[in-house]
Image 1 (spheres, rainbow over the protein chains, first blue to last red):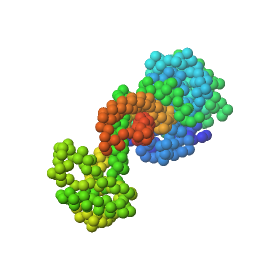
Image 2: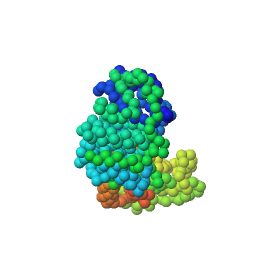
Image 3: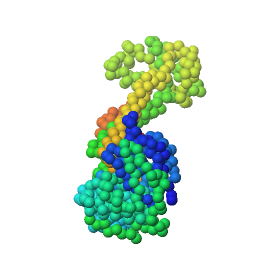
Image 4: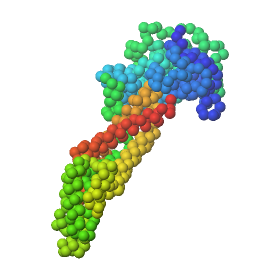
Length: 252
Length: 302
């Protein structure tokens, strides 16, 4: 099983305050589904910021995709960020862009030609049930539609890792399950999913998932499952990446 | 396809990341004002440079010899002797004894008619000497020594010497004008820097999103660079137009002074070419300043 993220005694502090994350040591493996849980203020968002490379640890070692992130030159970070999809809790869609352009943004950043991106973006919008809303601005979308736009934007670049911060925090229970279905579908296609949530009901919906629990900035791993996951994920190599073969019909 | 071409559809163009592809409201006016002032300041420096060149060329090879003798007969004899000596000197190209009538015409406004003719007021005889080249101090001293041997009342002045303080003052004015133009250019770029910082702060959330999606600093800087370009071009063209109008008006006024040394003070074709480069340089510098500002600011973040 391929180790794609490794924390060794990682600590994080902002300025001169006390550490918000302390002595984090764990490994995350390709193709697994991780839930990140913990009370408010436990450090979930800080840990996610480390994972999507918005922050470097204050101490310890962090390796991602086999590369030391502590010493990686700043100019090399964007290439790694393109391998990570992020769904922010507050969506962070760009108001001035249409749904289509928001979803196309990662491809344009990656230098994909205009005539090459129109098809994949349209397919992706269909996949998340927003085929008819391509021209709409975020302000005119419902909360669920904005959430699915954010998810589509996060996965359009076919990232190796998908990070979602409370993606079901602003939607009703039915929509929560539908969104979880999207994440599971992506996970089945080989994407490693790390999802922060307060919702214990969701944990039960993904039997193969591993749970990362934070308490006061420290990671609990009593069984060692984060270091040594129990078994291989269900994904077969030939299934990875081709999300268009597995529509989930997540319309709301 | 370059990275910029790949990003073109959303770089403030078809897909507006920044509002309406603009950086800030007053920026075009600020750039216009700066281009206008830089154009006028630079034109002043160029005119003064031309004037200095022309005046220096006029006086560089000129030496004035005065025969300061009260006795008219002695003055005439020494004038002839001095002229004869000068004509044999290898450093002298031409000697012209300024005619009495010309001297009278020069002094008449101050002394009135008839005084010179009657020799009531003794006026020195003048010899206008053109040297073979720019005369140095050593040659001038040799000429003066030789003159004193044949005409003891002779006094010799290189025109460049007495014009030197004036030329120095004009040169100082020229450097002042050029410095003011340079300072104004810096003020203009500082305005662009401030506007870009403001625009960057206003769009901080968008920048964070683009960063999180894997956008690099160069891509973000290109967005701002392209956004400022329309403002910079519009402001530069407006400023250049106003500058050209101001120069035309000033030129019209100065044309009335077309006399003496001022005759060499116009703008040549090369000068106009330099002035035409001001708006081009301003627009380019504004875009580059925006880029450098964004890159320098983003470098402080992760």
